[in-house]
Amino acid sequence: MLNSIKVERAKLNITQAQLAEMAKVSRQTINAIELGKYNLSTVLALKIARIFDKKVNDIFELEEGD
Image (cartoon, rainbow, N blue to C red; front, side, top):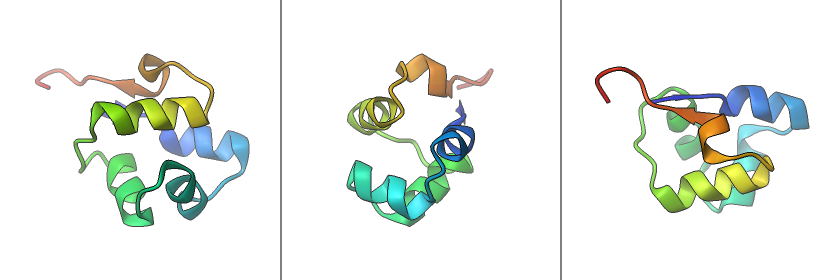
């Protein structure tokens, strides 16, 4: 799954740690999501989208084969 979390964080000028605190997960979880190494839950995807004031589809995109 592709995502634009790093870009969205840059727009808000927040760190992985700050995003993690807002989403109530670890910084390592945010890092793994950004790297595409973590299959997040629907709830977490919705929380992240809400933090960025975006739709889930604006942040996350399925890759071919997902």
